[in-house]
Image (cartoon, rainbow, N blue to C red; front, side, top):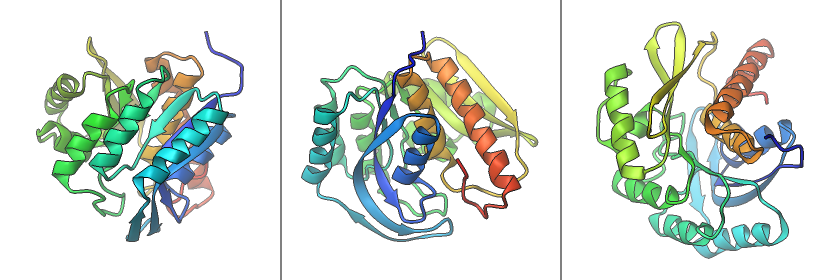
Length: 260
C-alpha cells in the first residue's frame, strides 16, 4: 500500500556547482515528486557538464554530523547515497546507518559524465561494499558494473547477466545496471533481484548526453521505495519520471541539463 504522507529523503552525495548532478539533482528530483529532500554533502566540486575542474572532500566527521542532525530532526523514509570517494568515510556511514530499517539506494558513482574519476579503483570497490551493507538496491551504470564485477560487458546481454550474478554474489542485494544499449533505438535498465532477471526498456530519446540522469533515476527509485512501492514498481515509476524529464528537456533545448 502506497502512503500519502509527506516523504522525507536523505541524500548523501557530492555537490555539483552546475546543479546538474549530485546533491542538486537529488533535491530537484525528490521535491518535484512531492517529497522533501535533506542532504549530507560529502564533497564540493567545481564542475559543469563538460568537465570537473576541482573537488574538495569534506571532513568525514562533518559528513557524519550532517547525517546525525538530519536523523535527529526528521522522520527519514529513505536514503540515497551517491558520491562518497573515501573508503574510511564509507565505513563510518555504514556503521551509523545500520540501526535504521529504511530503504537505502546506493548509486555507486565512480566517474563523472565528463570522464573525471572521483576515486581510485581499489578504494572504490571497498567503499561500495561498505555503503551497500544495508542497502535495498545498487544502481551501477555499465562502466561501474564492469569495475565492480571485474567482467567486461560491452552491452552484451549474456555478459550483462553474468555481471549481474557476480555483483549479487558480492553485494547480496538487488542490482540494477542502468543505461544498457543492446539495441540501436532502445535503452535497457536490467535488474537482478536474486531470483530472476527483469528488463526495463524504452525507446531512446533523440538527445545528446544529459548531465545527472543516473542521480535522478536512483533518487526517484529511492523516493518511490520510501513511499511504499515495491522494488519493481519503484524502478518502473522512476524510469517513467526520468523519461518525461528527458522529453521535457529536449523540448526546452536545455543544452545538456535535465529539467525535472
